[in-house]
Length: 271
Image (tube, rainbow, N blue to C red; front, top):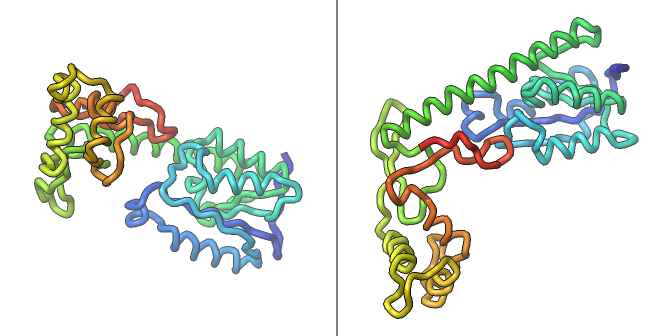
């Protein structure tokens, strides 16, 4: 593989990413990445022609809209830029196989990936060092995920809420203050709890005229009587089905039900 060279006057694209809002408080924020990237390019005489911003996206895979838009631009002929500038290689990807795949894909079209905090030459030793750093980033990401899941499991075991939108009929309230962290719990929301009870009553007993009702009949019943959702809208089949099948209403809540990578069902969901 021929590695493209960067010269004064090269056209640069900045790629800026944080995985979640709170990461910006402890890690390198988007504005700080932008400031450092601009300073890096200015010092080397690179002209910034495009900036791709990816807030709230994990680097454990390539399923990111701005990332894919950048790759598409960088692999078209002719490419609109000569280099892609990132704060660190972990901002680009935390999977070492995919990192090398995209580095080579860009390089084939004459575009080079550079990190402002991990500057590398193009010799074989430096390439190997980049690959080692990518392996470490991937390992660290997986270790962090394990620790986060362990903390969430313990939090749930103690009866605290792990975040996300509460089920209809509940609201989130502060339960304990531990240093700077506020532990939260679910509490019955009187405004919407009666609607949930009605849905279960219709499913089990009916409305007193007919027998037990199915999801479609319950949806029609609520909408006909202008019983609105929590957001003030009309009920849909999926919402009714979700309420009737959600174990939270019998005191067993599951979290981590969806993969953070691709949103697919997670067989390791915790209760």
